[in-house]
Amino acid sequence: MPSSGAAFGIAVVPLASTGPEAPEVAPDGVVGGLQEYDVAWRAAARVTDALADLRELAAARAEARRVVDGLEEEVEIAVAHLRVDGASWAQVGRALGISRQGARQRFGDVSGAHGIRQDPRDPQQFGR
Image (tube, rainbow, N blue to C red; front, side):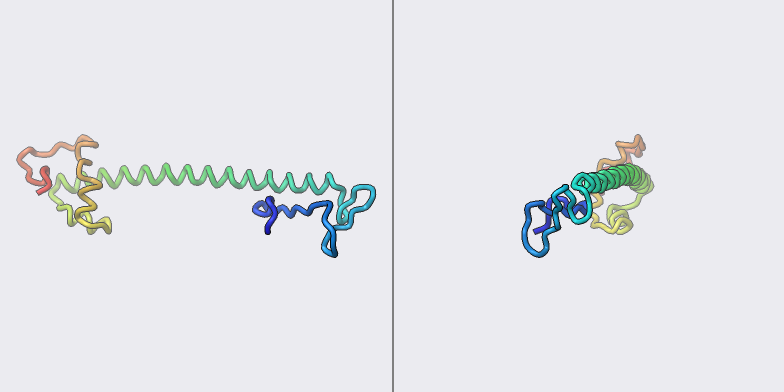
């Protein structure tokens, strides 16, 4: 079973382990050629580095979400303009790689969201 620190590249070896794989513990606290505090310090440094990497990943994920949100808004605006210009839900769905019904369900009320005015005589306004 992997140790609790294995995810961060930390190999935790219990000091009380026995057998041929156990590190040699000298009376002065040396484990495998390193002082116990050196082992702990190196483990803490790896955790600190891993936390910095995790912060970078979280920041990249947040930036990606901002980009995707901006793209979603652009798609909504484009769909609204296409609908005002007479594009059918089938055409919109094909362009987006989804069904006509999926396009209508997702973007059906989008034209009002961006202040695009439709001619009240326009049959497209009523989804026909």
